[in-house]
Amino acid sequence: DAGVTQSPTHLIKTRGQQVTLRCSPISGHKSVSWYQQVLGQGPQFIFQYYEKEERGRGNFPDRFSARQFPNYSSELNVNALLLGDSALYLCASSLEQGDQPQHFGDGTRLSIL
Amino acid sequence: AQKITQTQPGMFVQEKEAVTLDCTYDTSDQSYGLFWYKQPSSGEMIFLIYQGSYDEQNATEGRYSLNFQKARKSANLVISASQLGDSAMYFCAMRGPSGGSYIPTFGRGTSLIVHP
Image (cartoon, rainbow over all chains, first blue to last red; front, side):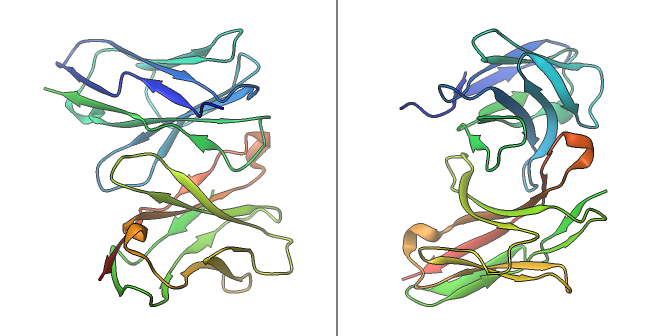
């Protein structure tokens, strides 16, 4: 079975642009979470979605938004990109909302110039 | 609020030796879970081991064991018989009820280098 897949793997944007990152959870997993990992730090929670509804939100500005589709895949959108948004963005899935551990994808490396 | 502290930015160990990676936590929840993840340079987070706050036995998974000392609020990872492939970043994390969101909190990580 395929694991969590994220696309694209790498992305380069400039300040002020907008970006959309995509995530496909493991088949049958209904919960998807997004994390930002800045170089040298642990992952920071951004969003959690379960059954297409937002179930948790981290301390990130409104420039960050996400959604989950009927097939449980998810998109993370970031508007008005800043240099500080450069990071590895990780997606994780689990069967149900509270299930642990979460299964992570390889991430999308976003660089802002 | 939950907090995870990993005080060792980097650790070195000789191949085939054992190594302990430290993790302390802080939470007001009575029910919580503690995790360790491995992150190779490729970026993906690989789940290693889990310990529930009510588990009486320390968790073990192959060469990994978790030294859980609840009173001290510590959850150290012990890797026995280190292998070159164990070189990676290691993250301690915890999750609590937190209003039902079960959102995990991660530490800053420890870089482990295994020498031949």
